[in-house]
Length: 506
Ligand code: AHR
Image (cartoon, rainbow, N blue to C red; front, side):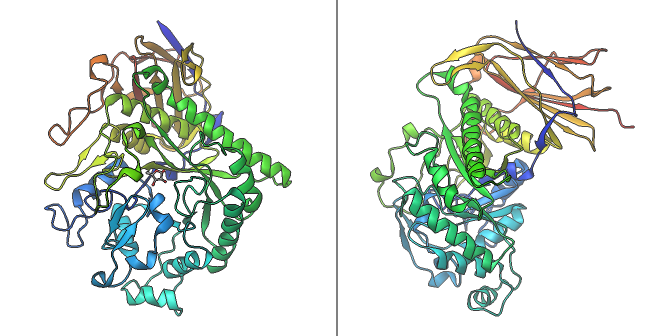
C-alpha cells in the first residue's frame, strides 16, 4: 500500500486562516444575477426579488466575500445605470457576454443581497472603457457620508449610511485581448496607480487589488506582473490571480493534480512580487487575491463571439461530478497552504455560472458536488495552517510532470483545540495510508471523518434538479489514533478527505 507521512506540530505554522479565503463571485453574466440570486416572481423570492433558497444555500456554503459586478462585464459597465428608480434605468448592450443588461439589479440591490447573505462586498471598478473619475464617483457614492453630489445621490436613493466598502478591484483581466478596453502592461499599470492614488484620496481606508494575469498560460505571464507592480507596488494591497482547471480528455491523472499547478502559479506570482519588492528596497510582502478560481470546462464553451444577443442567457452552466469536487477540495488545500501570502480568494462563480449552487425558475435551488468541499473547508479550517511537509511517493502526469500521490493540509485552532486535516489521494487505483504523527498534540480523538470520491464507478456522477442529493460526502472508515499518538487513515483512490480531531477540554 502507498503511504503518506506527515507530522502535525503547532510550533510549525504557515499562517492564520483568513476568512476572506472563502469568497465567491457574482457577475452580471448569464443567469448568475438574473435567475440566480435575483428572480422576482419565483416562489422562493422575497419582496425585493431575492431568492431566499439561494440566500440560504449561500450562507450554508459559508461564503464570506463576494466580488461584484464582474468579471469581463465590468469593463464596459456604467455603474450609474444600476442606481435610482428602476423604471428609469436604461437597457444596455453588455459587450463582454453579448447580452442585454436591463439594469433592474444594480449596486444597492447587490448591497441589500450582500447584507442578507452576511458577506463582505468586493467591488470592481471599470478600467476598460472608463477611468479614474468614474471609479472615484462610485467610491464617493458608496463610502462618503454625505454633503456631496454622489453621496447625496445615494442618500436620495434611500441609503442614508455609507457602506464603508473596503475591498476594491482595479478593473478585471486587463491583460486579456478579449477584455473590452484591454491595455498594455505599461498603460494599465500607469492607470491603475493613478486610480489607486485618487481612490485613496476619496477614502484612505480602501484595500486595492491590481489585476495580475488572467491565467499563467498567458504569454505575458510574469512580465505583466513585474511591469504593473513597477507602477503600482506602493499603491495597492493585493495583486490578483485567476485560474480555471478542467480535465483534458480522459487524463484524470493530470486533472487530480490540478492543485500542483495552482501551487506553482501562486509561487510564481509571489516570486515576481518579491522581485519587485527587492528592486524597490521594500520589505513588504505583497498579498495575493486569487479572486477567480474554479473548474470550468472552457473547451465546451463556444466562445463569446458565437453567442446571439440575449437577456440572461444560459451560459457556462457546467454540471459538476464527484471527481470535480475532489479537485475543488484539493484547490482549497492549495489556497490554505499559501495562507501567508493569499489573503483573498473567490470561487467563480456563486450561482448557475460554473457554480456550487444551481437554480431553475420552477425548482428550489440545489447543491452541486463542488458545494461540499467548499462548505466543509470554510466551516472547519480554523486557526493556523500547520506546515506538515507530506512524505509520499510521486507519480507521473502528462501535464504537470512528477507530482506527489497524496497531499495533506492541516489547521489547528488553539482556542477550541480542534485540528482539521484535509487530504487528497490522486492515485486512480490505489489506497494511500495516511499516517500523521501527533506527539505535539496529545490526547486528540477523531470527531468526524468525511470522504468525497473513492468509488471508481461514482466519480462521474453529479447532482441535478431531479436528483439534487445523489452525491454528498459520506462517512470515512478505518481511521484510528493509537497510544503513541499516531493517526492512521486509509485515503481511498481519487478521493478528498476531511478528518476533524479534537483535544480534550482542560
Ligand atoms: O468567470 C467567468 C469569466 O472568466 C469572467 O468574467 C472573467 O473575468 C474570466 O475570464
